[in-house]
Length: 251
Image 1 (cartoon, rainbow, N blue to C red):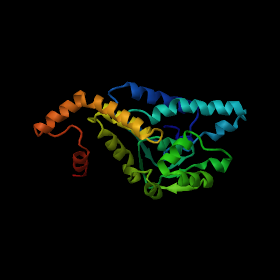
Image 2: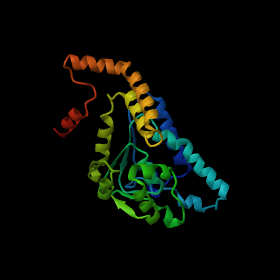
Image 3: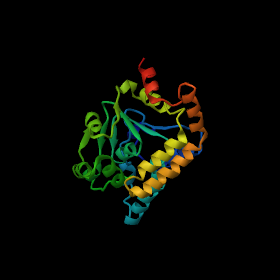
Image 4: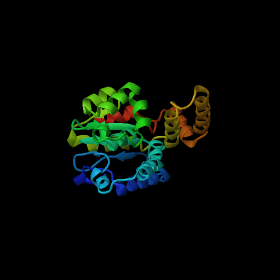
């Protein structure tokens, strides 16, 4: 996101650009992971209140604007490739939700997260009612929504929605390195696993068992699994070994 003068606040153009990037990432087999970050020392300050304030929306116009978000947001949440958010500075309002829509959140010590909506008399949007309870639990979701308080990087990690904290000057490089580890990953298998995990709050055990059986059948019959088995049997290194890559990165 590249509106540093507006702290990368989401306007219509940026929302359309995000939707286009997600679509291209889904269609391009060469893309193995998607990294979201913001320019100029902020991740995303949320919706562009200045743009919204220029004209007072009618109830129906506001509803249509939110409905438009839910055209591309599910495409991001359910993108069958790993999505990483690298958060430096503010992730407020819709920017907070955009970070939570990623599979993995990496942050700098400067990162700040806030469901700021109540401060300006709004309810949360950009998928907040789906994302927050699933990731944080219902009571914590209510607390962050109803208090609109700010969460720093350390608390975010303790709450479980930030995976790693890196120095500000190293965050971009570490996030790129994290994404690059998926270059030899079994994209199809990871995509099916992600789909099943995203459905795990919605479906009962039997339905999830059917998804598991279907997905595993596809994976076992795939070329990636066949090659991995051959590598294992001939004592060759596996193409995707996170532990090995982590050791190599720290060496």
